[in-house]
Length: 507
Ligand code: XMP
Image 1 (tube, rainbow, N blue to C red):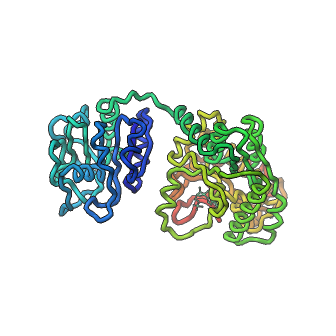
Image 2: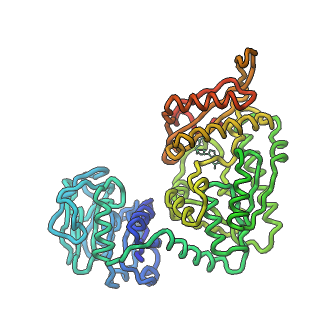
Image 3: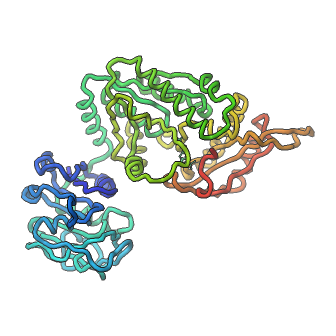
């Protein structure tokens, strides 16, 4: 195991991810833990992360100096390097010029950390302070044009510092450096995989939960599915999954959720078919925010009622991922839409949280899901909003409109899958702008019917997006199939706006 000491910001998780990619297990601890706690699991190495503070600031995060006495190799990155320098008797100050972004780095001497790294290599810099005087025992191992001490090492004590960020992709030889640290310096063996992660997490969940019961809101999405199966693996029957079906799911989706979790995984699943109730609440509602709020509130209410029926429930499972943690911690953005998120049940519910995916990135969660035996359809599923098809019918929701949208939406996804494009697209779906009727001609008859919109976007996080450039024949196939197979539709259009200025969903 390698311990990563977190000094804030968003760096520690990315370092952890890179270490895991190298096949080494690691855990992250906040900087204020004692040396005893950091060393408790006999780590083979310690990494100090970057952080937003200045080491010279009042209340700057410190580390228990005990960690320097344990004989364990330490790699300090950015803030971590500065802290190491200051703590061991060196000096850190604010240079006149700052370095941000891509920078050329030149090696000095031969450090074990840079074995196999080019003499001149690109690195990613982002710092305000720099080491101006190295502590006794340290030698210079690299510099840049603006930072004379961009890397330092005490090879005997196996302490290494780098001012740049080897964990980001903009440092192309960063992985070589991390591998040198892990395998050559710390002598880790590697070979760790997601399979091992499962064992460790399962053990932790068991310990935390004890004999109590646990509840989980299941939507069929990747995150809540993987979290639920993982918790189920740990505590079996102590977990009850509640699947609130609001009736706005896609064709065959509710059946698939029941089949996967109840039949395949033998999980305790309460399936609440509340579709009629939700539909009645939304009668006459056309305003997008009102739709969202009505669905969100009723969803929580239904879930809460179900939870009250169960005994001794102390924990709630949430499929929070690492990017969610970062975003909610830093979000200052204004509310464009009020999100209804299955994971985002209100904090005033009297449960303690179990968030087994908190440290993982999306692609790691998918890999974990595969290891747990979840089907590819679930593991590779595109994101789907909590309020479902309700926010893809522009205007009032009626059973007829819902049926039309559901069938058109199925065709969109079906054609995309048949052309092997599903995994190239972030989200692809149909929209029904129900206020629009237009004139058409079908079988020599005049029609006055609905228009279906197709939306397909590429994105890396949903915050920005670009519309997908389909080959014409794919669009053509969708258009013909929708008009032929879905009664009530005589026109199909493709949405060619990016986000911004549009959003991905239409409401
Ligand atoms: P927009 O439409 O804001 O969507 O560009 C960005 C991403 O968020 C999804 N989305 C939601 N997800 N609950 C969710 O869980 C919601 O209420 C919700 N609204 C939008 C949307 O599908 C896209 O991936």
